[in-house]
Each structure stands twice: as structure tokens, then as C-alpha cells.
Picture (tube, rainbow, N blue to C red):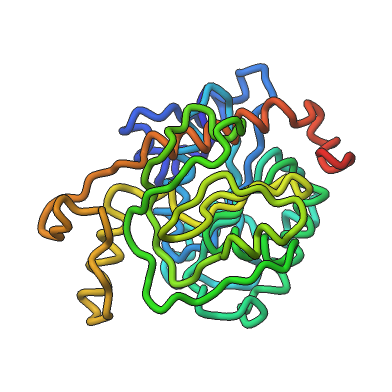
Length: 311
């Protein structure tokens, strides 16, 4: 089954060219099933790039997915035109007031990790979002800064500044092969990392109920399950395109910003050569497994989401 997104959303044309099954409103209405309702709270400045990346991953399953794009209510983006935001995004305050429920909900990263959480201009509203997920969302996926924000809010786990940017493709170990979220995963693999902060395993271990599923000896915990809050937190970027790290590296070089060549990304660490994507298969596995778990456990009556401890 396809992912249902507006036919004039830029991701529609991109994903169609890639062979991802997408469907518009009319065709979706002819399919006599309840699609999974997935919300994407997009905090990244490049909205179109980010929405396409996540739509690609959640749209590659046999289930029909209805994707809703959501923004913070008052925060304005300078990197995406206002017409796009008006046409495709709903402010969270509107979603909250509507009483809408979601089978799955993604909170993306944001380039604000140098700030304390309380210094973020939309932190108070994001706290409302995170609390709202506990009554209106069956399963929430916090990504990079979004995952750090969630694990901090629900468990008090702190983020720590690094003395240099963790930047490149780092090997990860599969710590819980029996987890349903890791079906098909290799014992180790690489994932793109791009952050100035880290979460520390000993602090995660000290929090109640958290289970680390993936981790690295070099860049620390990667994927953490929080069953009590029906959530996953990932601190790295499976959703990245093949050239996303290259774009970040080229931007910093052009701006004169001190930056190391991304580790284990370019062949022979040579930025003049085209990077290779060595994480795509595991990216599809993780998000496909997440969607499958949602499908297996979410109530058929979407209005019942949040009415029991397990959604």
C-alpha cells in the first residue's frame, strides 16, 4: 500500500520517480481500509528536504499511511517559503484543539543543540506537544535533538556538549537483536551522525525503564526504547540522503567554519569523491519495523488511542 500525501507536495514527485508508492486523496478514498495516521512535527529549517526523507521511509511498507505535516505554532521558518508552509502544514495549536489522534508521531531534530532546552524559544509549546503525545499518540519517535528533548523531558537525562562535532558514518552495535524494532538488522552497521552534543549511556542506564537498542563505542547510545511512554529515541540520522552530510560539509567549508571531513563517508576520506550510502537498508528496516509494530498494536478505532496505558 502507498503513503497518502497531497499530489502537489514536492515529495510526491520525488518519491514517485524513486518508485515509492504514493497516492493522492481521491485514490486513497477508494481503498476500504483505515490508513495509519502518522504526524511529522518538522523542526528542521529545510522543511521540504526533511519531509521527503521521512515520507520515503514510512511510505515503503505494505500499509497505507496518511502523513500529516505539523509545525510549531508561533515559530517562523526562514528557509521554506510561506506558501509551502500555509498549503501543507498545520500549527500544533490547531492539531491540539481538534482532538486529532495519531497512530505514530515523529519529532525531528533541530539545529539548536548548543542551547539549553529552556532557552529554545518554542520549548514551552514543545513540552505541551510531548505531554500531548501521551494521550493522543500511540507511538512517538524522537529523532536527534527531538529524541534528546523527549528523553530529557520524561526522564531528566541531560545532553552534553562535545569538544568537536561527531560527524560522519559511525559503526553501531545491535545490542538487542530480539527487539521487534530490529528485525533483520545486522550485528553492526553504519549510520550518519551530525551533532555537537551527546547522550551518555550511564545516565540512560540510571533512568527507569529505558532500554538501549543500538549503540557505538565511538559516539555513544544511538537508539533507546521507552516503553512506559510508548516512544523511541534515536540520536543519529537514518533518514539522511546520500549527500546530506556532503551538503553540511560543503556549507561549512564555504562559510569558513572549522569542520572535520566526515568520518567513514567519502571513499578513502576524499571529499572530491562521491559519497556512498551504506545505511539505506537499515533505515528502511527500522522505520518499516516501527510502522509494523504500530499496525500490530494500535486500536482499530483511532478514537481509543490514549485511553489505555498502552495506547
